[in-house]
Length: 163
Image 1 (spheres, rainbow, N blue to C red):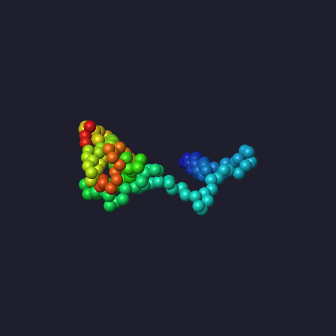
Image 2: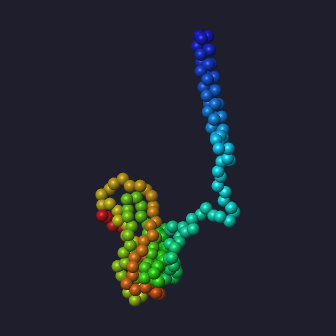
Image 3: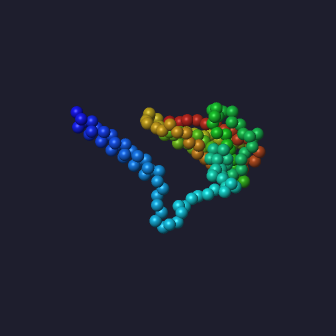
C-alpha cells in the first residue's frame, strides 16, 4: 500500500510539474535570433480601421445615392435594404438586394414609363428542399435603363422564386 501512495504522489507531482512547465513556456517571449525587436503595427490616431464604404449602407464608388423622396419602397418587406443609386449619369440603377442560404439574387426592370421605373429584386431559391446555410447576404446589383432616371420615381419590389 505504501508503494502505491509513493507512486501516486510521484505521478501527481510529475503532472503538476508538466502543467507548470507548459504554462511557463506559453508565457515566454520568443527569442529573436537577429537581435532586432519584434515588428509591431502602430495606428496613428488619425487613421481608421473602418472600411471606407459600408456594403449595404453606401453606394459603390462613383454611384450617386437616390433621394428617399424619389423612392417608393412600400412593397418591400420590413427590414429589407432600401439603398438605391445611379451610375453613368442616371442610365444605370443600382440596389442592395437580399439573399440567403442557397438563394441567389438578381435584378429585373419590368416597367419603365415617363413617371416611374419598377425595379424588382428577385431571389431564386432551390425548388427542392436542401441543406443551406442560414446567412443573409446583401449583394449590390445594377441594371441598365432605357433612359436616364431623371426625376422619375423608382418603385422597389422583391419576390422569391423557386428554380
